[in-house]
Image (cartoon, rainbow, N blue to C red):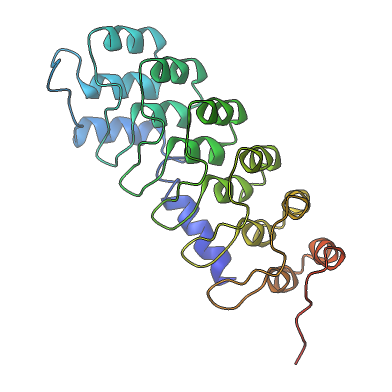
Amino acid sequence: MKKLLLWLLILAMSISLIAVFSLYGCRKALEEEGVEESKEKPEATAQELLKACSEGNLEEVKGLLEKGADVDAKDNDGMTALMLVLDNGHTEIAEILIENGADVNAKTNKDATALMVAAWRGYIEMVKMLIENTADVNAKDIDGKTALALAVAPGYTEIAELLIEKGADVDAKDNDGMTALMVTVLFNHTDTAGMLIEKGADVDAKDNDGMTVWMYAATGGHTEIVSLLRKAGAIEPAIN
C-alpha cells in the first residue's frame, strides 16, 4: 500500500510535473518566473514560443520560429517547447518543432523526457513520432522511471508494447527496484500484465525490499494476475 501511495504521489508530482502540467500553471510560470530567452534573436523570445506552444497556437509558433526563436527553449522547470506541446496534445505543432531541430531527448530538471510525457499522456501517435526521430526509449528520470513504466501505470498496453518492440528494456528497474511488471500489478492492469509476461518480463523479479511480482499481486488481491503468474511459472512465495 505504501508503494502504491508513493507511486501515485510521484505520478502527481513528477510527470505530473510534465504530464499533469496544466495550461494555467504553464501560463503562471511564464508570467511570474520568466524563462530562458534566446540571446541571438531577442525579438523572438523563449517566453513567446513557450506560451504559443502551451496554447496550441500553430501560426504563432511558425512565425516565432521563422524569427529565430530557440526551438529548445525551456521554462524554469526545464520543460521544453516540445514537451509543452506534447503535454497538451498538439501533434501538428510537435511535428513542426521536430522539423525545426527540436531535441527530442532534452531533459527537464527532474530528467523527464518528451517521450515520457507522451507515454504518460497516452498519445501513441506522438510516441511513434518521437521514436522515429531517435527518442531514447530507455532514458530514466530522477526516480529511475522509464517511459515504459509511465505507460503501464495508467494501463496503456498498446504504447507499452510499442516501446518494447522498439527496444525498451522490459525489466528495467527504478530507484526502488520496481519493474514495469510490478508497476502494472500494483495498478491491477491484467491485460497489460499479460502482454509484459508474453514479452518476457521477469515474473520472479524482486524490488529493493525483496518483494516479488507475485507478492504485489497477492497483497493487492489481484487474483487474475496471480493466475497469469502461476501459468507463467512464477515461484509462489512460501506462506509462513
